[in-house]
Structures are given as structure tokens and as C-alpha cells.
Image (tube, rainbow, N blue to C red):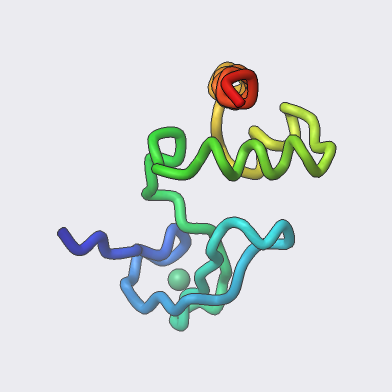
Length: 93
Ligand SMILES: [Zn+2]
């Protein structure tokens, strides 16, 4: 089950973690071969556990759907659903 990261530029496996993107959400990686950096893109982000929490965190930060969708790589439909689910939870309290 080891997902191996591959450099999208030179197709080697010489990948090292390289901090996070400027939103401090997505992991960045650097290829030690061509020294280019890129984001981890093999995850099916939309189905990741906790993605709704991340969406809500950004909503609370005042980010728009468009920005959130570009940060997290999820559809605006998914964001709308997360917001709706979150409101439903709040209504229960
Ligand atoms: Zn490379």
C-alpha cells in the first residue's frame, strides 16, 4: 500500500518532503534530481477524512468557494455540502 511519489517533471522517485504550500495545507515535495518542487497530487482529496473540517476552517477564515476549491482541489459542490452538513450539526446543539 505504499504510494510512491514520482516527480512529474523527470519521472524519478528521488522525492523529498519540502514543507507546505503557502496556505500551510498541502504538502510540498521536491525532486532531488531536477530540484523542482510540486504538490502531492495522488490523493483523492475530496474523499479524504477530515476534508470537511479543512473546508470549514477556510470558510471561517473568510475564503471564497473559488479559493477553497483551488487550495484543496475539491469541487464547489463538495464545499457547499460541507457547509450544509456543518450547519445541520450546529442546529442540533
Ligand atoms: Zn525531477
